[in-house]
Image (cartoon, rainbow, N blue to C red; front, side, top):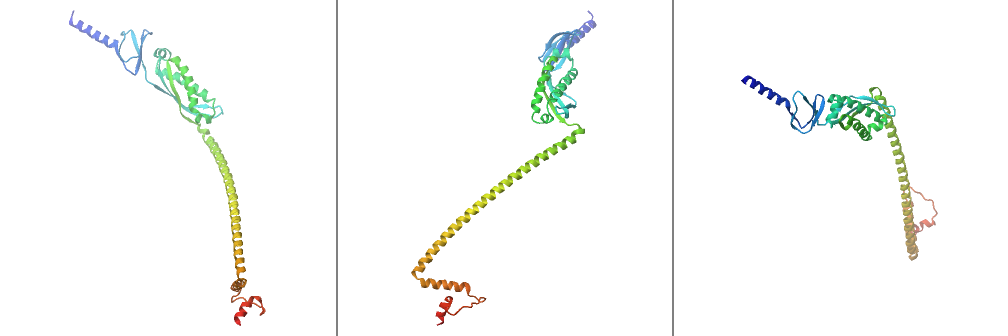
Length: 284
């Protein structure tokens, strides 16, 4: 056999081997078809074999993929328009079913767009705007994810999660809604203020009442103590008077002089007045 023929045969064999053997990455899964007919699925990474020119390898992602929808307007149950921007995380779990139904990732995105958006729109239409934007959103999105997962299995797809990135009001109604929200918050604030003022008035009234009672009790106690002191003083004066009535009378008279006689006071009294009896005694 001529060397050129041998070389040609060797080249053909090398090319055939190269076409027959192909690598499978750990992030990939492969199905082999022969003339459009399914042969086998390859899930393990490494080198795989196919018959050149007859069999075809179709590669699909094993990793989690993301579907990001365009923002769309949704009507809530309380007739509020809401612009929703949602996304979903998904993966291919059955490459054969995936290949038969949607063929490629682009085809899968088209189907997911129908499934996810329809479920989001249908579920959100059952709830009020307030519930969608507050803590109820987590429960709502969980329901949507479960419904989408059931439908997506028909295409060999598992939807792991559906989430809302952003939920905004349409521009044309945004300002009016915010104005109503501000008015509502102002009304609630005024209600809290009036309730606070009412409570403060009650506290002040109760405090004033207690203060009046305390002052009255203190005055009563003071008058009682004062009365007891006056009574004790009278007793002491009475005992002193009993011991020397004349000396007590003399002291009381001196006290009267001290309180009544000064440079600005003039008395017109008889010389035999009782008030001057001690002064008359000194004069003599």
